[in-house]
Length: 79
Image (cartoon, rainbow, N blue to C red; front, side):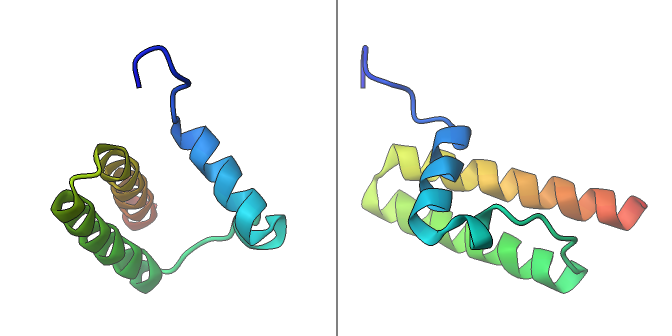
């Protein structure tokens, strides 16, 4: 990875948006507490899977997604 392009969260979001379509990934909506809890559990599961595979980029991506979901949940609960 030395000297190569960085795989940032923004690049990953753009990839998923292009892959799945803008109508799925580009739409922002307010999630329910249950949906956020499910997303947090899924992120934790994907982190474990990525650790088992030894894929550091995947681990990094899913940790960022986990943190985003936790922040979103925290903001929703304090609002």
